[in-house]
Amino acid sequence: MKQKFRNGNLIEADNGQDKFLKNLYGSTFGRILLKPLVTPVVSNIAGAFLSTKCSCLLIKPFIRSNNIDMSQFEDVKYKNYNEFFSRKIREGARTIDMEATHFISPADSKLTVLPITENARFTLKHTDYSVSSLLKNSELARAYHGGYAFIFRLTVDDYHRYCYVDDGIKEENIHIPGKFHTVNPIANDYYPIYKENTREYSILHGKHFGDIVMMEVGALLVGKIVNLHEKAKVKRGQEKGYFQFGGSTVVLLTKADKVKVDEDILKNSRDGIETVVKFGEKIGVLAL
Image 1 (cartoon, rainbow, N blue to C red):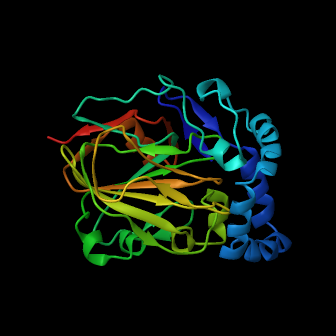
Image 2: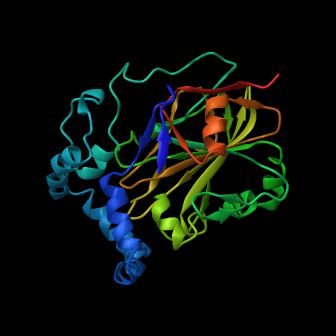
């Protein structure tokens, strides 16, 4: 999959996860193996193991194989693999853009931004979905026609914590159960992504950008999505939650005439290229 840094440099992403999934999904035998792997029972067992002390044996090989720069993270001794995976960043390693009129990324990720129209079905690497099917709420989906869907795809080497993008009041979490399934684009040739994934969302009544849907999508063998708050008053840049093991996705939905997306991101999205963004980075401005 093609990706671009904000400076315009193009990269061809082909990490170990991509290669593994290409083999898994690209063969009949792999797809036979996949069916039991995505069941809740197997996912729960895997999640439980990754919370044990024995799972620490996986940490160093994972760091080496994914070339993770651990100098960016807190220097602590991890009790298990899940604790390592949801590790915290060092103070100062990420800068939160606090300009009130700037719209920020909630996570380190690869970003695609798509317009929401009345009859739109979004194709994300051959997977079609509507906002209505994503939310399982047609009335709420209609309120976002004319706005944007921001799709932040996290890979295994990314920082797996995410933040609020505006000051405001956060409503309660809405949980949508489903099968755990990979969100890696290679999978999309064979399975619809969002219809099979467990997801959780809430509405942030933002002080500057209006009502924003903030959704987290779980993935293959993820123990769970961990959101830290129910209904609460929150601040821009404040941690909202984190993912346990697995590549995962954050989706933001904004209403019409609220956010003017940075042009490089829009152009990349139109060209089918993801933009590499960081936690707290400016990705747009308040629409005037």
